[in-house]
Image (tube, rainbow, N blue to C red; front, side, top):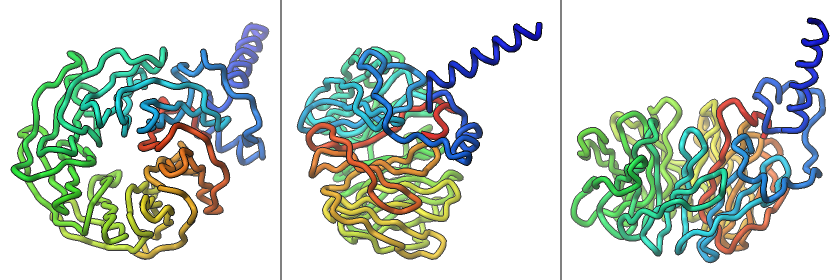
Length: 356
């Protein structure tokens, strides 16, 4: 019996060693990192055939000019796979199981449904003109797609894999980026300087929030009480109360504010600025800018790793992803991807890849 337990323990240890970062929980990762066993980044990249492993912790980065999606292995910082898409892919979202990914193809007006194990497109669903931002419902049944060139949010039935209706935001409205919390969908309108708050059950707009000039990638706080809006025309991050729609803060950042990630404790954020080619660290509690990093050509979209020790930024001007150390606030790596990378989204199962 004792020998059996020993063999089981050895088997688990071997699996963790072979799986590397992807097999660790957050607790295990903290213990390892505290002991000085962090990944050096020198390990060889996984083979192309292994890029579709479900447990792999990766970033998906669509590149508009190459009509392709790059798969970045997080532990090694290497591009390990590619998926050919339709014209001008912009953003990607994952199902909660990480088995499917959905990519918006702006110039072909479609959404590609990708099998993340085979790295193949299984279906292309026609939607409205110039699809851009997307969010997926928590039950994985409905994909909401913003179409930059008209006033509708398009609904895709993910089981039937076809368009299943629209939400009309009104004549003259433009849809850009979205965030979903509970039954409320927040949709930025970059041309009319607004955020529409839509009840997804009734498909009706329940609140319209006036914003600064050119709102872009909106995000909600973890508790749904705050809405974070980068406004490109004002070079600022705006913070709103989601219940009342009242502005609570406006913090200056680099010109052309584009996207934002907020730390788990809600005390700080990082804002990208595409036209300003910079990222700005923000003290949310103090309502002020902390530091900016310049020379990040066309810094567009941003995503944290699982522990929020690094932030990954697409550089549309250089065809790279910049890796930012969130403690030192320095760019520590550049990863070459396709031409004009747009969005960036992490693929990681809950409880897996805690150190990545």
